[in-house]
Image (tube, rainbow over all chains, first blue to last red):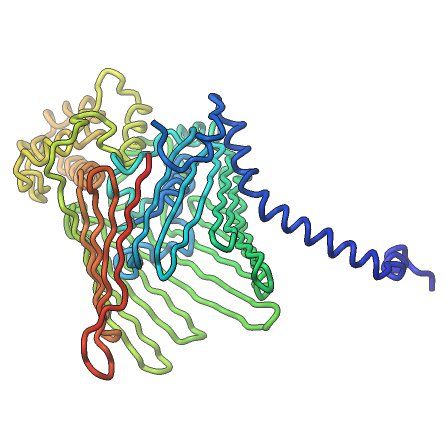
Length: 64
Length: 477
């Protein structure tokens, strides 16, 4: 029975690379967590025609 | 009271023709709004501002036990043009109340508009709570006109499992709606389904919508949901039935629902009726056929008319509610460019005796136009077609009756939408739980204020006690 490429890959996955993958996943979670709101703001900024200033975009208070 | 972000989501749904009433989880929305309304706890301040038509920000501060707050941002690919700040928003839009269920209209014209402009939209919303920096996120992606993907997520870096995500794939058609749900918490899988009986005006879209008899305005829906938690291998099931109609004589809407959960043996029936333009009554009876436990809940809401003169006068801004705009657009689409729809402001309403405006079920042809001619956008368009018939064949009761019921229901609905209310009082009580909830929500200056109290009778000592008390101020512009 010949090993399928997937099995081979799984077999050769060392602890080090497992750790690395876990780390990458952790980092991506943190990036998604803190990057989501800036992403929402960027979408809002890029789609408005008048390109509001950063202060206007961030401020939850009505601007005068 | 909806938060400003919830209000914007509703506006997004409305402007993209997404019928929220056609979703299974909203099948008991009316009775929930009257019985299970939340009471604010502690002091809460809410300030929101619309930086542009696509971007909105909001800050919430509250001192419930300790000082905490949250900062929220929202992006909508559909321009949020017809949203209103707390100064001019109508209370009917800002506060969860009775929902008039309408048969889904898939009008040819409407369809074209929505596919061209709003067929595909997306909405992203993120809220970060502090202290703690927990994130609440929501993404709505409209895939086609009738399908959307909804993702909700809570992420907390200080929690063990660091949060949960829930995915909804929703299909919302006039005849039915389906949802597939997956939650990462417990690997919960769910399917929800709602079916509307009767005609859905799909095949009669070529007819003038005004000529559809109004008894067709009743909606019978049946829905069911199935859940399966893959990790714990526990199932769930419930089914619900909703009948929503309007009185043919007075045009007042009422909704009845029956929800059954056979696994828990729970049965819940509700009856909600809009008793007048400004008041709604709701009753709910819960029964468990395993334990024979039962509970009767009653709820009531009463709107107060605004007395002060609005600076807007007859301006359309004041007449706020979005259904209005929709009706007006519909009337305009039906080609009556020469006639503008007269607009009733709340000032004219308060000047007149309110009793004059109560719709009399027994009207004859003479005073037919006296009822409230300004409230009938659709009536105006009919004038040209109908007056000769009415003149010639005034004894044609059939047509007359049809138009009469049409106008009464439309008029009632318009009256509800157009009325300018300044505050609402909600009362709800539950006999078994021995509690009373009181909530006052209204406009003070430019703020929307919500304050309420929950009182209950202690089961052992039989002394009344305060369970909850709070006040919320919100401002948006």
